[in-house]
Amino acid sequence: AQSVTQLGSHVSVSEGALVLLRCNYSSSVPPYLFWYVQYPNQGLQLLLKYTTGATLVKGINGFEAEFKKSETSFHLTKPSAHMSDAAEYFCAVSDPNNNDMRFGAGTRLTVKP
Amino acid sequence: KAGVTQTPRYLIKTRGQQVTLSCSPISGHRSVSWYQQTPGQGLQFLFEYFSETQRNKGNFPGRFSGRQFSNSRSEMNVSTLELGDSALYLCASSLQGTSGSTNEQFFGPGTRLTVL
Image (cartoon, rainbow over all chains, first blue to last red; front, side):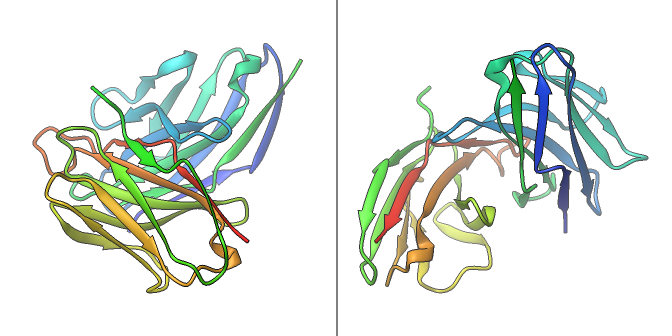
């Protein structure tokens, strides 16, 4: 079975600073990995996903993540934070052979002016 | 293509009542999953339906049930509501099971249930 650990339930950065949200996964098979964002009172929106191929994946709103098999990590980064990035971010892992998707506990990102 | 829709968006019930929430997946998606989201417990998986069959189930009591219709629309029901059932209930649909699918789940806006 898969699992996801997001390090840090709250992350605060200044506007213009680097955003780094950490995600480590556990999976018995090569996983699919996802980052979702949730704004208040809304559903989750896909930011980016890794399935196969290039390990550095680019998503919407300037976010990217790198799949590192040796570290079982899939950290999310953005070079320069914007106030509109303030939201909750969820990392998720899925077994390609079924639809068993497991979500991390989420990281709330605060952006200070 | 229309996204995942959930009705109603907001609901207020009292303890002991029952509630039915509805989810219409994206056209062509046969997999529908339900999640409960609360500040304390985060995002918890309830169950998943695929082609009218419950395929996966989370660790929730039997008061939580669901079903899926032939058009892939899904409903979930919670009976004998408790205060702790107050939450945002999210529905997600997926192409999983379809050739080329990457298991990506598309989420609806959720139904905010308040139990008084």
